[in-house]
Amino acid sequence: MRARIQAADLRDATRKANALRADGAAEVFLDIEVLIDPDASAAFRKSAQQPSSGLLRYVGTPRGLAGLIADVRRLGIADGVVLLTPDRRGVVKLANGELVPA
Picture 1: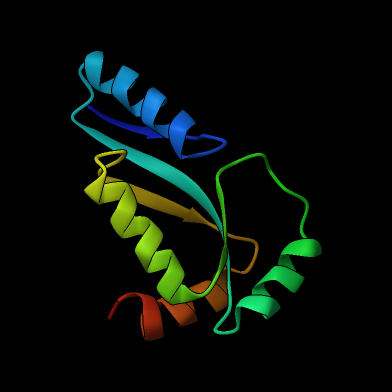
Picture 2 (picture 1 turned 60 degrees about the horizontal axis):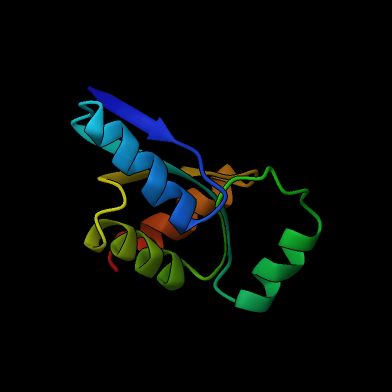
């Protein structure tokens, strides 16, 4: 069984993922709201214009996002992530150019 979780922070994500695994989930995916830009300050400016959904949110650079995703996997919080963003086209472009190679 695959499951997706939504959490306010990594501690909440860990708690929810552990509960799902105890109930038999084979794979757990964590939703992360993403606002990225090659320039971190530009990402934070974009963030100020977007209301928060209450989900775990990453604001920063593609390299920083790659680090967060690696930490989520390394710490065993989730088997993968689902990136949610109001700027899908921009995130896909940055992900293909910078995130995937990282």
